[in-house]
Length: 297
Image (cartoon, rainbow, N blue to C red):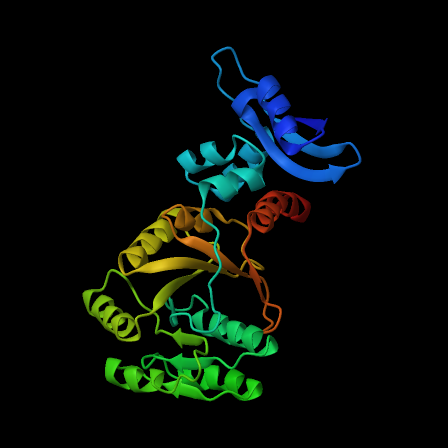
């Protein structure tokens, strides 16, 4: 991979120079104003005799380590990893602002849904909001008590509503368009009864759905689960346990189904254990993992 700096009186002039010299194979890494006008840093890959862009060997080795699906790995290795991730996967925000539709957090048992809800509730309270927190988990013993321990510390009331009728009554307590966080029970998207239960709750709440999925899963299993929840209406992906998982191929495979990467669980803390997922953040995690693995051997 090669880097080249271009300076010109304007962005238009600089882009004309870049296109004239590098064509469509250049990646724009940064743009900044300078005394002469504008300065643009580009990255580009030399082409072989057939005109095919040479893959980046560092990215190739990294994606092989993580076990990324081959087609996706080939696509991501064609340029700087942050740029390739941004082009190949969808990164988004959960959109928990006032007046937004309720957000439901779904996923397999033990994925970290309850802790994710607690972390987001903490973030909202620290920002001055008073979210309505609801647990619809009537299956797991102690599920409500676990979340209630967090909401009490935040000065919030936890509402228990595991049936569409009680959920409708709970949502009637929403005040002034406050953000709504709904913790669902652990669900298999392939079990018809659980599928129908979740669909009924989502329809009652007219909710958006975020899939909470632990990092380190088998790649094919993660893709199947993500696809199954996509059929149920999931739009967002929250990857948990990035602090303990070394291989993130499952996260990449799940995101490749079209879910928007939104948040990443990076530690046990309620206030600082969840961060926004960005191409730069994910690229750093992907590239650092093989190096850490080599040092630990």
